[in-house]
Amino acid sequence: MNMPRRLLLVNGPNLNLLGIREPEVYGHETLADVERLVADTAGRRGFEVGAVQSNHEGVLLDAIHQAREDCAGIIINPGGLTHTSIVLRDALAAVALPVAEVHISNVTQREEFRHHSYVADIAVVHVTGEGVPGYATATARLIEVVSGSAAR
Ligand code: CA2
Image 1 (cartoon, helix red, strand yellow):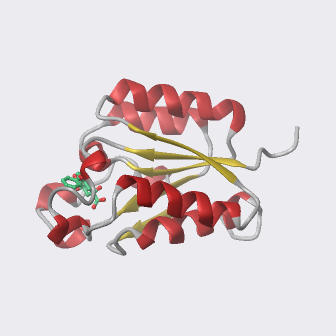
Image 2 (spheres, helix red, strand yellow; image 1 turned 90 degrees about the vertical axis):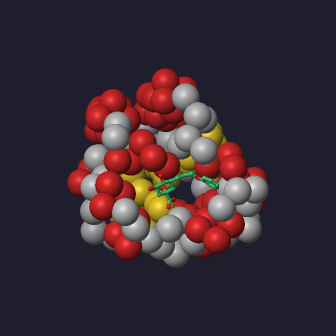
């Protein structure tokens, strides 16, 4: 089967509040802005994007499992689940698609508990602290990986 020209964008808990709360940390752009940015970045490269945001871990897991059927890779900002969720990590590992992990803020410069990511070692692309534009960086890099023009 040919590689599907489709990516899944996953945003974890509380990221529906982007642009509404804590703009000093996460900026003024909204989740809709993020989803548009990723769709445009992918679209210019001939990929479409399915997007999910949920405050419920199981909803995210179901979307990740479904991606196995019709996606070439996953762009994910797991939110706080980054630092806590073995089940999210297991789901990403199980579907075995290339993963791009994005964080809006520079987690390495924040509280100690944000320094560890359960996703980092299974992700092939990491973008941290670039703000919302980091989603475009992650999307472009992931497309390079899935298209075979970058080393995994
Ligand atoms: O910097 C990131 O993108 C984070 O993944 C965001 C998470 C945080 O737990 C991670 O350590 C780093 C928090 C997502 C909550 O998003 C909000 C957005 C606006 C207002 C309040 C929360």
